Image (tube, rainbow, N blue to C red; front, side):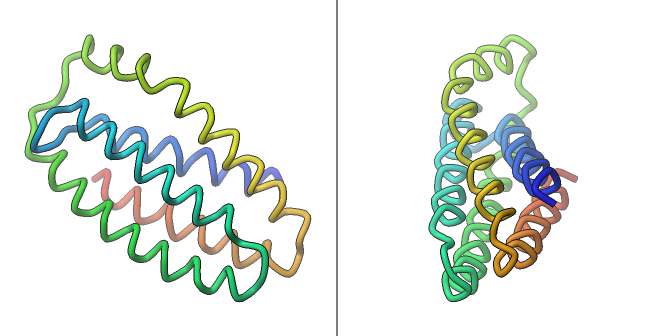
Length: 138
């Protein structure tokens, strides 16, 4: 179960990163920065889960986060696709932050995997995030 939680977290982070690469109404870089901020936000939401009540509150917070991500996706869709060079430059610029968020997400997944009372609800939440992100990537 722990391995699945970690994979879900990484898959979600990868989806957010990919969504952050596809564009915005300002510039590719500004949307990527906003996507990184939104990923930070969802990691903080997940890190705050300690009890069943926290899990329930996180579900509502994630719903709000998903709405924000839909708005971000609209901004992304308004831009032309970035060049390979732009993608590489953004990857390099955001590499350290992305790694830190991945590490934090893995720690949350590990902690949830050790708590049977929260693990299933957390998995459901991660699946919800993952599905919504996949839908947005279409």
